[in-house]
Image (cartoon, rainbow, N blue to C red; front, side, top):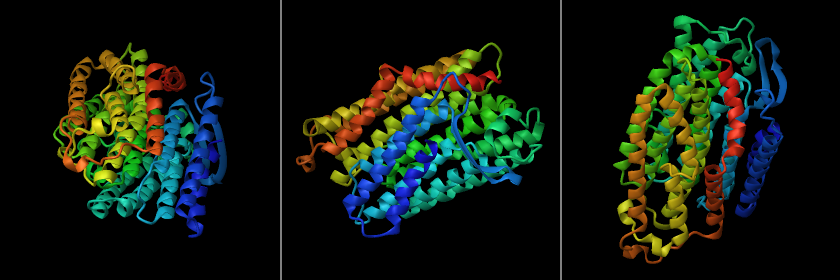
Length: 494
């Protein structure tokens, strides 16, 4: 199942690349069909997953270079399955969503499918080298999507994105090599490394490996102060690519923190848990405050991603702490961090798709150019309001479930961080209410007299994502049951 999920999009990319005879409709149909096959394979894996079973399931393995411990290894725990399924869903949404491909439809969908495949490779890999290769290749796909189909100054934004995040990947590679060299028997098998904990009590060497991994993953997340590549990349990227960048690629940083330093360097992470939690708090407050000051719609949404990824990192740091008597709180924080990854993907993915629709109708992200759209576009208004309220953590929606768990776990371990972190939620509420006021209420400018509401495809895609947001908010047990089992197993060994 996992191999099908991983290679179906890549097959589609190869089919679209092999010949130029495909029409725009055919290229879009091929892309949507094979991305949907990938999603259905992950749904099947979800249905067959046993929460009471071992940590990693659906394992598929083919040896590559046995002497060096290299192999094609894929498998999932509940955390990986939740994040990868959300990612596959978001890719389907981005591919189906209407977008002007500038006469290069075949190439556009080929790059989206390539990015789909390597992105899932990050979440499904159980081989450390395979994880890194896929982690690095995502930069290539996003570079071309921004540089070719972006707007504003897309080549500069793509260059900055690639160079900055590639530097982070190289630092991560140093950490992976350091971890690999510490093993008695060479292997890249994540299961073996997690079981052996090779750098437990490793002193300065273990600390250097941990710092290298965290710096590389923090750039991808991104955490303050290594976040400066993100706003411009989002502003100049096409709407669907922004949805993937925020909804999928940022999760590789936080997912990597769970899969690598938390699972493989537990003792070392515990020593750094408080500083990492403080950095997460800085990201929460900084992201929300800077977002509040943005007049550009896309830039405002981009800074909220820094804020929300701060919640995720805070939950991971709390899970890593070894403060006695708080095992349940740490497990709850890790579950909340994973739910936040899923919720943020659905919510912010929707917001970036909406911003893309606005840009395609007006060619502008400046919020002062809008107003009064509630009368002209009621369906757009309703779906934007729902996504905005989910992002600010309104009860009954996915964001609340995630943030409640993160802050409950944090309050038990680092109460002062939880109290300060709540201020970020207040500012987030202010910035989204202001966004809704400026876009949809007040007088309608003359240049928007003919502004069209969402079409059927846009409503279907955004409505599907909204349904997921509401389902997690109202009846989250289907997601929590999957994640909690794996969180408990990860925390049980610490």
